[in-house]
Image (cartoon, rainbow, N blue to C red; front, side, top):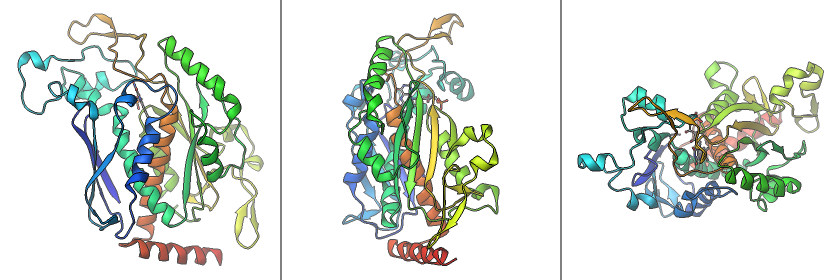
Length: 386
Ligand SMILES: Cc1cc2nc3c(=O)[nH]c(=O)nc-3n(C[C@H](O)[C@H](O)[C@H](O)COP(=O)(O)O)c2cc1C
């Protein structure tokens, strides 16, 4: 399975073409829209989320609600486009209109300045329109399809926020996907610890008032992933490496860890490795390594965390330089959120789902969903008997 996303933040629409989804998957459009709505939610989001109610339109690859095996095209319209037609016009516009909403004061922490230097854009809008996290909409839509592929082979995935603006949720060591889903369903910040909910919301409100932003840590967990996805035989086949890459490709993500992650640096080996036991199949007495050994899943939960920096657009802007005059100036302000960590956790969940679905399809190369389900069932039986 492979896909490319396209589209500018204030352009007419976002697009994706996905190739390699097996034929015969009963595709729920509601489930895609549900993921898109989850990405748009979360306490502390700014104005845009009220304008856009993302809805996917599928224009190829699906007939009578079943995938055909042919490329699937997904489209999400930018509903704000009507207010941006001149600014984002594909056709030439007058010299005066070219200056509409021009950006000349790059925001620290954004792609604005370096993107302008690299592509020689005199209007930094040409950079920020694409570097914006609006792009993650399409990656969530792809992930929503990936999740349906995973569900067909009983693999479940969920996400939650572990730290927001320095406030840390208490997370039990054993936490199933179902438990995460139940607990986060009643949280506005996608956390599993209701005791911190009020203080997190208060912090978001205070941060917004102060014109500032906050970041955090998100966690993705999976249940029922069979041992042996990915491989140790070549560096680029290590599945933890692929997941790390996709996590770091999420806008504003600066670090990733599996299981106890960086804490492993402080612990002796005897407290880090997960001992092996056999009781009608292999399992571990703990899961400090987050479900990976040798770049392969080991049958335990995958536990992956990513750290998101605070959003770089500040309503109390930081100092920058005007690219025309080279004079110091306050950075431009685009419509922005005070935090997007809850939304980012949904993005993380969906991009990890996509990597897992890609890996399954590579390992079990199936043209149809029936083939995939049979191959995975056979494989599960084989490793159970090892
Ligand atoms: C879900 C999500 C929403 C985001 N919303 C905003 C936003 O409203 N304003 C902003 O300045 N950055 C936002 N960001 C972060 C920027 O897109 C990101 O910091 C920027 O593109 C620079 O990339 P980098 O931080 O990965 O280096 C968001 C990120 C995510 C994942």
